[in-house]
Amino acid sequence: MTRLYRQFLGPGDLGFDIGAHVGSRVRAWRRLGARVIAVEPQPDCLGVLRFLYGHDRAVTIVPIAVGARPGSAQLALSTATPTVSSLSPQWIDAVAADRSFARVRWDRTVDVEVTTLDHLIATHGEPKFCKIDVEGFEVEVLQGLTRPLRFLSFEYVPAAHAAALAALDRLEQLGAATGGYRYNYSPIETMRLVGERWLDARELVSLLDQIRPSGQSGDVYARRQGAEPVAAALLV
Image (cartoon, rainbow, N blue to C red; front, side):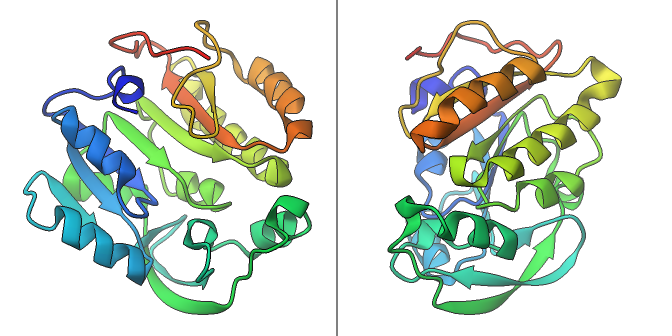
């Protein structure tokens, strides 16, 4: 994980972890010397984050969600599988029909405060890298952003293919004024990119179409034109 993120973050750089869960990325980013804004609305996950990083002055824990506009929203929680808790009823409906989610139950809800990426940037500064892992709420998160960030990632779940394409469309809108984005892909938790060459949006869609039948999720990585990674990541 540290080898993958070394190309995006270094000592003193700022990273936004949107959907920090229990802080696996926080740990890797701190090893790189980066400062971290860890955003997580789930109460149980917040307890773990505060235990692990509450005394680290380079980590700011923000106990709210991120969306298109400030306000509040209902977070559907899965007690047994908290990694799939979501603010998106549409995403839950889409993945619930997939057999890989057959045993998942969203068994309670909690009201959470919502802010925007623009507001987080105004408060903490612009991140060099932003990870977005919010279970189908990626488009809403990106709608609360009005500038193209240098590097970012968002989760791809084949059962919610349309949500990923919508997030990609939003990124293309954000990057249009600066020459657009280039993309790469990392299969689920491999921490390796699939290729040395970064793809344009059409090529990424073609790649996701090939991946979709496998049912295996992963992460899309995006870099703004002109923003070069500082080191090559491991390849699959």
